[in-house]
Every structure is written in C-alpha cells, then in structure tokens.
Length: 101
Image (cartoon, rainbow, N blue to C red; front, side, top):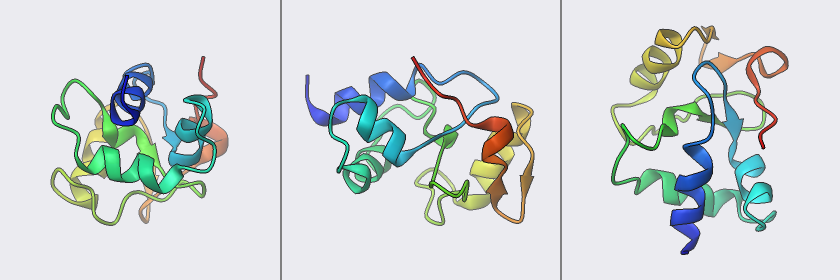
C-alpha cells in the first residue's frame, strides 16, 4: 500500500461529525513526522466523496485555508452538514476530535 493509499484508508474510517488532524493521521499510519505529506496526499485525493478529507483539520482545529475541493467555505459547509460547529474557521477539538481506531 502506498503512503497516499494508507492516508485515504485511514480518513475513510473517520465518522461523520468528527475530525482528525494531519498529525494524527501520520501517526496512525506509522509515519509520525509526515503530517505535511498527509496534507499533500489529501490535496491529491482522487475521490473526495469516498475519502472525506473535509474531516481533516490542523492541530488547532483550523480548517484548511486551501481546501482542495472548493475552499474553506466548502469545507465548513460540509462539516456543518454533519453537525460540526465551525466558528471563524475553527472546530472545537475538545468536542469534535475523533481519537480513532
């Protein structure tokens, strides 16, 4: 499995209404220092409906300023549609962070 495939498979496990960070994904797939590469993989996501990359935020809960599939506004809309509160481009990590499998 390639790095990108590992990222996509992990992101597919994130439940609706929850978010994870780039670093959490990197750690979960055994590459703890590869958070930036996780972001790059998600930017190349060939199937955004199947791989819900809108559920990935930075460690502070900030949405992606360059969300690849329509910008920060689209990412916020997708998260809100799942019940996630987004305020000024941020998600409350104490409330919405998923600790994973």
